[in-house]
Image (cartoon, rainbow, N blue to C red; front, top):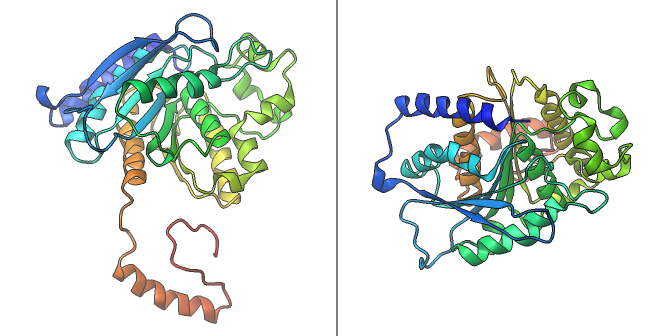
Amino acid sequence: MLNRREFAGLAVAGATISLSATTAVAAEAEGTIAYHVLASSHVPGEPGVAIYTPPGYDAGHAEPYPLLLLLHGGNGTEKDLAFFKTVFDNEIAAGRLPPLIIATPSGRRSLYMDFRDGAERWESFILFDVLPFLRRSAHVSRGRELTFIGGWSMGGLGSLRIAFKHPELFAAVAALEPAVEPAVEWKGVGPHTRFWRPGEVLHPIFGNPVDGEYWMQNNPASIASRAPDRLLGLGIYLEVGDQDMLYLYEGAEFLHRVLFDARLTHEYRLVHGAEHVGPSLLPRMADALGFIARQISPPGWIDQNVLNVRAVLDGSKRSAGFPVGPVDPGRVGGR
């Protein structure tokens, strides 16, 4: 999981590198971040939420803005949203990302889980406190087609779980370096996961000993393998660095294979040379936002040239006895 202090220093260093290599965003083209406190019956204390509004945000705009829930990593806070502000501003200014609202709620080190004993309910906090609050306080879409969720590290795990459990609420999920285990059953989780997720974190959430069935009900790979058809309409983006110090490439690669074998369309990226913290997170966040942008406005990548080439190859496939399906950029099968 990301340590907030370590992430802050390294992410800020990365921001300096990024700005030196790109055109600085003019002050008048910058978005803003506001911080709020929510009272909730689902979790203790008064957790916060940070809300990024894009340059030129207009609460009276005819069309509501897309909404992206962006979940922070372990030991972080809602204030971690600010580390990526230059990325948001630059991507919007360059026209690679439409103006949208981005919100980061506090999740502490909860894994964004409803605890098994009901003591804390962080998933419920996201769904029944944060989402309604955002739709009351900002001019955002109330429809699934413009509502997205994502996150990094613990937030990548949380976003995958919440999206996989509630695909009727989100059009897509974008998970950066998600803290997922390479297993579909608790007994398959090895020491590479357990060393950074000790009992004092797991036991309040899953019970002591860990309730294997409850763990499976909340494990993204298990959810996808049990009922893949529920996820057919969900956009999925999954990435991780091949130098991740927490070995999270093992879980991400495992989940990629589960999704691929279930013929669930998704984008998967193993980022060469990227670590769990540091400057690589800024361009990686930009790439993830590019995926969200393509969900909002799908590109026209199937043109006449593609159709012409495909017609020739389809003839060869038929001659070889291979099935030929309709032209569908979302199709994985048929090979």
